[in-house]
Amino acid sequence: MIGQSSSRIFLAHAVLILGILIVAFPIYYTFVASTQTLQTILKPPLPLLPGDQFWNNYSEALFGGVGRIGGVSVGRLLLNTTVMALGIAVGKIFISILSAYAIVFFRFPLRMVFFWLIFITLMLPVEVRILPTYKVMVDLGMIDTYAGLIIPLIASATATLLFRQFFMTIPGELVEAARVDGAGPWRFFFDILLPLSRTNIAALFVILFIYGWTQYLWPLLVTNSNNMNTIVIALRRMVSFADADTQWHLVMVTAMLAIVPPILVVVLMQRWFVRGLVDSEK
Amino acid sequence: MTPRVVFPNKVLPYLLVAPQLAITLVFFYWPAGQAFYQSMLRQDPFGLRTRFVWFANFRKVLADPAYLNSIKVTVVFSLATAIVAMCVALLLAVMAEKVVRGKGLYRTLLIWPYAVAPAIAGMLWLFLFNPSIGSLAYMLRSFGIAWDPLLNGTHAMILLVSAAAWKQISYNFLFFVAGLQAVPKTLIEAAAMDGAGETKRFWTIVFPLLAPTTFFLLVVNTVYALFDTFGIVHAVTGGGPGKATETLVYKVYNDGFVNLILGDSAAQSVILMIIVISLTAIQFRYVERKVHYG
Image (tube, chains in turn brown, yellow):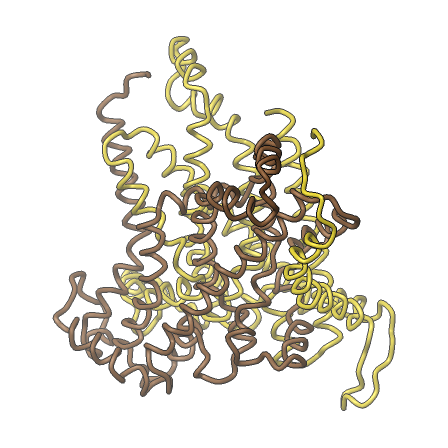
């Protein structure tokens, strides 16, 4: 390796620290704002250190304060969002591992037709078929239901392609050995394929959980009742910059509660996260 | 590919693909087909009669100054977001390659914006730059800049681009770091022995070798800016002030859900589909090439 002069190393650290300041500042600032009184927030500039209202604001928001603004408690919003994010992550992994299993380990008429039908959905994101999809949801009575929030989002090609790619690397000898030993397709799936796919499943889970948690357009379309809002949508409804009544300190607490769970997932499961991100884009 | 060893079942595979296929058909193909069909229909103002008009809706949409404006807004927004997010991420990735101590910590601190929903990212930036209560807006004003993203279209666009690019930095950073690690160290050492300085080494060796990563990220970032940023636009500006930040996706939503012009909205959906299909095609052509050249 080429020697680096210490001044250049110092410069590199300086640039990185500056980058982290830019990247982290909006989140830190939100945290600071969530620990201040409403009066302090309304008079910029805001102090750079957290205030002393942490317990007051958080307990007020958690035990009724946000309910007064949006009509729904924070607990309910977090529950809705968690159900949606987990439902999407689990559902997507479930249906795509099954279909990838069928496409790689079986030969049947129409196999490639099915593969292409799934593959083409890559090119049909919700954003390009907003209105007709909404109409399907109304016809099926899925507005304001968890099923409506979850099911239409669990079909997508990425996860299927990822599992297919991984399955194709599994040597045929393994399948043959399993068959010689008398294992049927289910036995093979549960005893060999699933354990081998553990890493891929974990990586995909992290990515999909975040995907589900940060959805915006879809919950906006399929929820009318405040009871079914996700925390992101509720936050949008609480914020009104023209309205002098906005309870900014509570809004900031809610924003923190909406940001922290997915950030924890990313930071604590960093290894899987990086892997899932890089793999799912191949 | 060698012929795989497979299971001989006849019915089981159909059962296995059934769930995904059912959802795909009901929620993807049926609505997409509807969009195509709708895009050739026109309703009278009272919604009583519907006529089949072939491509008249497309002609109308493509001649509409509001739509052309929205194309322009989208191009500016997507390019600016992609370029800003990629330049910052590349700079940080190059710096992160140099340091040894604290590398892991830097990475951890740089990746978390990925977990923030685009709409929330938008709201945080608006909170920072809101003319009445934002601290950074306050600073800008004290420098004598008449900052008001709620009234000034250019300011609104700058705010949207900052929020959208901010969220995407972590993603690009991870891919650039992976790309930089794949650059053979021997090449760089050889160049150093030949007397090439650090800047020269970067532009003549590292940057060209990063081209596949850069191109890939350019496509991904464009798709992100086109589609995933609906939340930012909806939460921050609502397409305003005027129509200064009305992107294509926002306009589809607005025409369909708020203004209820179904035929136009469907025609716009179909145009968007064509854009996604071409972008995906470009991406896959490139992936194909990467496989061939190793």
